[in-house]
Length: 461
Image 1 (cartoon, rainbow, N blue to C red):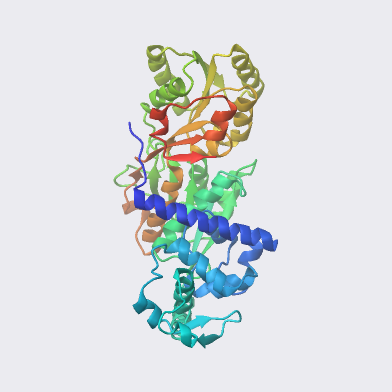
Image 2 (image 1 turned 60 degrees about the horizontal axis):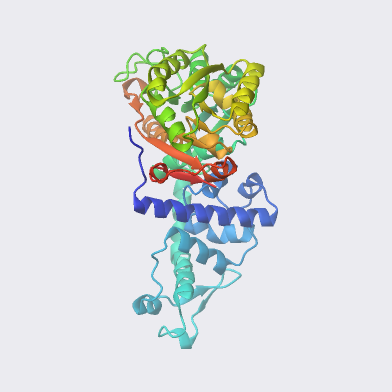
């Protein structure tokens, strides 16, 4: 099994947009605004704060026809604000072309008015790359284009606003929940859907002890055009609440066995989406990773949920593989918190212990506790999903969940345009990612082999 890497050009685009997101966040925090407060600023164009979160995570761009409104909301000179997004969103913007410099005859002033370029600059004299980029930004906002943009806005506002519901099994302010939601919004945006323009979204966050069945019933009662459900428990609750509202699901291991669809090819009901079929061969990768990053480990605690079919299956697959790579494995029931704490403490004292966290809904619920225990007892740990690494865990290998949310946007789009869930085949995910936290590796005193680093898709520092 191999990991998937982003193409070099995609890496550049992603990195630049993340830089743009960090810059926007710094401006917002300096201004003392929350994401919600910024979204409520006049003419920013973000009816919901989740769009601000999307941009700050590096998904999407600030629309050019909103630059001046953003500059005003963030208390920054318009020329400065125009210049910076251009360097992030279009780093190839030409600055040295004499023809381009000659064609740009206006520049933006601080109050949004327009004035001629001084005579000594008309032939391009004294205008460098930075000034040209500022002029390019000004050209994007020139009066003729601004009038055209206003016309487009009037057309957009005349469109029917569609209604989407989202049920998430995570807490609202969990950074990973926001990253997944940002990916979903990106998928919608790529297909022409934008919150506050032609779509509105109602969220229910069932993490942190929420009542998922109540949340599902509330969403269904709103009668949205489609609901996005994340995880088996969410989809099960949604289907109990409605058999008519279309449902698009993500992160569901086996929707056929769960009774959500008749078959992957012909779902047959009101639900379809992206399945995450568990490949039991992945457990061998987890065990191998643990031995590669910590060769001295000979015993590993395996956190699992024995009440689920997946938990039992993962444990059985590990038992078949562990002896061949010199590992003794011990099951740890995630439903028994006290025993889990005692077991991990014992593994930490033994000096040759490690930890593997298998796929389960309860692992997500107790993510921070598990990561904290691993750090406290200095256990090198392998997780199945990047959110553990982002929370301070060492390394993960598993499905790229944000990518599923982005792809789910395409199914929501098709349903909004009239297609029926019953006729849309369930897709399966094949994209896996290897994510590592170098700070955690350093804290554990681990020297990560070059062979492992070469396969890492994302490094968290």
